[in-house]
Image 1 (spheres, rainbow, N blue to C red):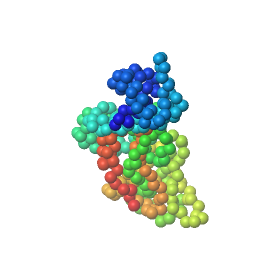
Image 2 (image 1 turned 120 degrees about the vertical axis):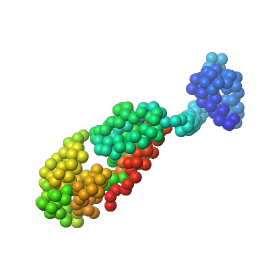
Image 3 (image 1 turned 90 degrees about the horizontal axis):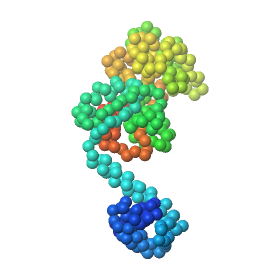
Image 4 (image 1 turned 90 degrees about the vertical axis):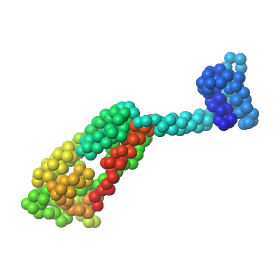
Length: 300
């Protein structure tokens, strides 16, 4: 602890170029700061500061030592702040960005979250567009796909997969495809990405040398739930994520088509600015949605 105190005295003096100012920050006298730095210099066998009657300045060795010591003290400050945050009760506003379909799963369990954490005020922003977590002012964003932004911290949430589905009525009228090539004779319901304008590709397992089938578009939507609803009403075969159709498959409104031929899988992530500590309100929210919304593995 003596050495830690000497390091702190040295770093604060190097930053303020004054024993007096460093002492004010630490809460000790200028004389105590000077003695701590002198003791550190004696232990290291090198002069870290040049002193005169007006100020102090770093020697070349002192500058190198400062550059190594400052990050260590920053890490210590961060660890202390994280512990302090962890001991606090979750409270305050939490702005969350989610995919549009997220409301179907989150809203029904919000009552339980509010009962557990009544002092957390949630602001939910449902949007399938890619958003800038930092510039957009979000505390956390739930998204899928690759997460290349180094400015963000990430927590892995639940997995998902894509599948083909159609209504029993549609399959009774048009027959059930047995191979991907059979899709060329069917009505296909496609999804268009709002941010790029591209129509989503259907990732299917094909034999070596087999060409991807032509997928006749009966309908193109830029809303995933609308595409699923169109399939429920017999407009064709939809390619969509498992969590959007799980309940409809269970109650018989939809049937899975070509099981085992779909190959696309994904992962949900929680993303928040890297420069922020994970606050108590964010920590309990992430634990809660992990517990309630991502408890199922993808349908095999």
